[in-house]
Image (cartoon, rainbow, N blue to C red; front, side, top):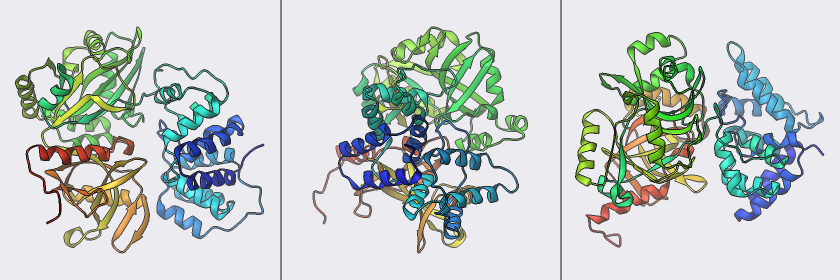
Length: 522
């Protein structure tokens, strides 16, 4: 029997009302097993609050103001046929494809029709899904467990397939239909990148790894390069295609003798020496006049890993083996500067060299480590010049004085379980142009407003520099960043790539290796 969006809203309510991961998984699995094949993918995406697949370059551009406007002005048409799960995605796709003059009116009309055919419960479900704020305890991990239970597949097989397919809705359809999901890496389907943890020093990194490969940590945009024959595509770490923004690098890849591979690297704005990350992002936003922009902000590509070669998939090999093969494929000037050592003094000298040449710091990589897709771990470690964290803005305050009219006091949060916990606040680091951009962006993401505080959906990632992490009763985390300032707006990073609260705690605890601790308030 076909299911309606109201049925999905009822499921969402049930999942949100029960405690315990296993009970949530059971409810979701039972629902999935009862669906027709064409309903599975859309149901998964709506439950995750991702109306469009991660790899889609389309955007809904549906903000708080538009949604609240159509909800307030809707005319109830509940006597019409109920809207079915399979009806929703084509409507959302039409909204994403609407552009140019009149596109806002088209989006509003489509939204009004959707909300008008839903009960208050169904409308609230749709609103939360469009915002990506489900808050029912059904994270991607829970959804993947439900797919495994409903289909009879092993959970590790499901997780691995999810890293390679780039479309959890498609994965669910395949799994529940009995298809083989033991897929390998595929050309032009981006792979979720391996992530690194932060450490404080070269010594700490080498204590963990012993002998390690040290690489310059470049202040650029991480990319995945796919090539088959003359077809070359670049993908960001958020899995979206960015090929059209960097035609000069496409030409460079086409000059290489290897005709089939997937490699990882960093695109850096470079003019005699590295340019600031903001210059790179301004260049990447350009959709017109790219040839002219390339003269003003030239780009360089540095590669550091090989995931697929003409011989097949490389991710199960050690880092040492992958890099050796990459080195045979590309010229030295296209490789990230690198050394192998177990000596702290030599590592410190390499770090100084990286900083003197205008880079961020260094990466330390376990020579025997495989490539673990989408996971953060201690096989890759990053050491920077100053303390930095990637955090998500969850609220902002209207500014005073010369910042009046801008959202300029930002609440910074780290990942904490399935949500985010605030660890600090700052108004420092942005230019006037960036304050204006940030205000416009956060207003699009507004979820509620009270007095001077605007709460927003957790979508914007910022790289935050700070002096240390203090004990503080001001925030639920019990910690606060001291002298926090925004170093860069990281449009290339997904909120799921932000640092975890545990990383902030480790930084907080590290200071007591050299400082005393008061065990009670005084």
